[in-house]
Amino acid sequence: MKAIEVTGLTRSFDDILAVDRVSFSVEKGELFGLLGPNGAGKTTMINMLSTLLKPTSGTGLVAGFDILLNKNDVRESIGIVFQELALDVKLTGKENLEFHSMMYNMPKTLRRERIKEVLKLVELTFKADLLVETYSGGMKRRLEIARGLIHRPHVLFLDEPTLGLDAQTRRHIWDYIKKLNRENKVTIILTTHYMEEADFLCDRVAIIDHGKIVACDSPSRLKDTLGGDVVTVEIKNDPTALLAHLKGLEWIKTLNQHEECLSMTMDKGERRIPELIQAAQKHQVDVACVHLHRPSLEDVFLNFTGRTMRDEEASQSERNRTMMRAHLRRRR
Image (cartoon, rainbow, N blue to C red; front, top):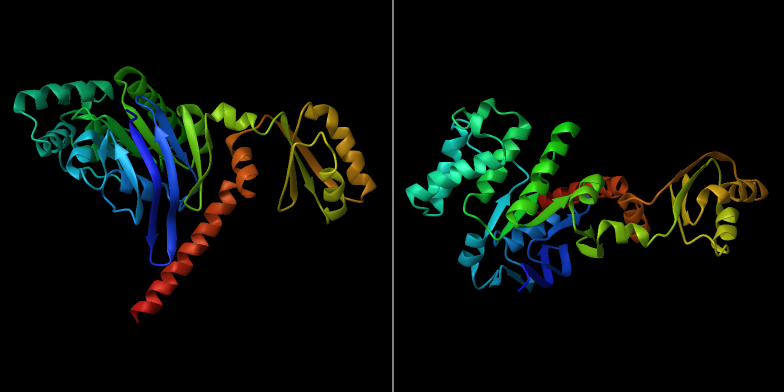
């Protein structure tokens, strides 16, 4: 039995299709990532799988339980860490965990034992009796992860677990997540819009665009689909003639235009750069600079969607503003 099985999961909000017929499965003990820009539908998927939101259509099994027919069983089988902090900062770390474990009707002796275990796991034993308002951002996030594990869930959902944290703290949280997955064998579903986070943490990554999964595989295999090196050429004028020429070259495996950049994948890119410069000169295209690097998940996202993550988040922000204006007009 798989940890999660999803078939045709769909969710609409008025005229907006937030999640569009998504299907995927997650193996037991896997660390699975949902990677996409803000507004792509990642949190909506998590909310449906954790029974917080009813799907418009489709089915989902979590730890073998149907998200529509067995909601209580699903909730007892999962832990969840939300994007926004959900701790009572006027309680101590231990008191937050005590309150949460009582909600699961855990016996007093077991509660005390588990609180000690999870505090040790996230290295917060020395902070257990201090008010949460004295914790750093990273400590609060680690306490939330401890809270999500208090009842030994089969599946742990982490929704943007490092959002708003500085780079050093984010890396520490990554190490804790890896440790949880490795030592506790808990299945983890992670949503993120950080490319390097998905690359570092996840066994497999599903790339989400406009509520759909456009690619799903291990980070290394996703990058291998592009083949070879990525060469980016920054240009200063109209590249139409150059683009037509480049599309006819067999050694260019993928080609995308993004604003004032042409992004290509090819083998032995360093040897092809002089030929690219010559072609640009022949077609009267001014080259500002050339970059060469190995494929990244950002390149994979660009290849499958034709946009960078930053572009998509900017357009999603504009769509959100349009939706809000339409909603306000309907209320008047």
